[in-house]
Image (tube, rainbow over all chains, first blue to last red; front, side, top):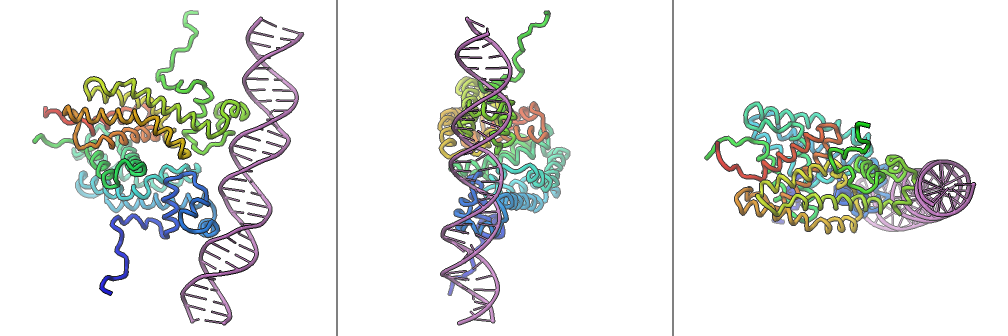
Length: 199
Length: 199
DNA sequence: GTCGTCTGAGACGTTGAAGTCTCATGTGAG
DNA sequence: CTCACATGAGACTTCAACGTCTCAGACGAC
């Protein structure tokens, strides 16, 4: 055969965020229907309820695993973007691009209602990462690249929720994924970076 | 008595968003615990479960009413800010201020998982209002006050989700309500308005 | 072929919350 | 005091989803 049978990796690599397609499908459905039952999730994943229970001992475990995987991906995305290295503006651009890719898949999972201890675990997992983002904000402020009026804490919040908003706009069919991602990047950049010079 | 006995209206008037204190307390609790049972909501409101059922025929009805009231308040807040009148920058500032006041109370209610038809009803209720915001964005772009790169659709989304993010930061104790509100206003303004001149 | 493994179908028990109902208590109006 | 009405407490039914289990069929390895 002239065409090689191996599938080309999907253009946005975030698709295989989860090991298996069942988890991926469940996550996709859960993001759209946060209160979905195991029955629904199984149907969405194309397996029987029994099989879903074989893979995940309980609904709680399923949700925790999916959200955990999303948190993990978030951490890896930010780390991969090396927010601590190089020019702050470029580091910021890398971070935003990496997270933008992620948001389409995992953004709305962040809206999942969680048990308190599960949420606490996720927050603990991402605490270091969020801190590296805060440091990036401060670093840029010290270097004169970023506005000093922006509280690093707010920077993290803004980044997070704009990504969620982007994912939601896509869900409602109001923006395409690509456009939403561009808007997030532009908004973050404009609100964080200082105008360096006038024409 | 020298001091008049009538209570001064609370500094942020949004407190009595709902007619009765029971609904207000339930809404407050629901925002923090989206999966709360009627038992929990009743306790949070300081009434018995029976009474809660007397006032709201079902949990669905309760949630729908609270979210509906929030949507209503959103509509009124925007209308009250008259986004269609006057200088676009000032109109924007009015809108952001009005919504900022609202977000502390109702922001996280927007995260409530809803049945599809309930969500559709809320979207229908707010459609006109969102449209007036889009028109404000366009108007500002035509007048040269706002950047033309910002899609009016994204403007609405950004505004919405930054307010949710502000409410969430407050919930997590990471920002004070006042600070969060200021940050939202500043972010919106910076990302939307064009730099008019260079010192 | 046989074996091991995974799966779907579906019955089954359990549980927790929803929603209904009754009754006793309290309180304000007259 | 008496009536009307709202509430709290709690028993009760219903129900949907969870979670467990069994069994039969499919499929690959060998």
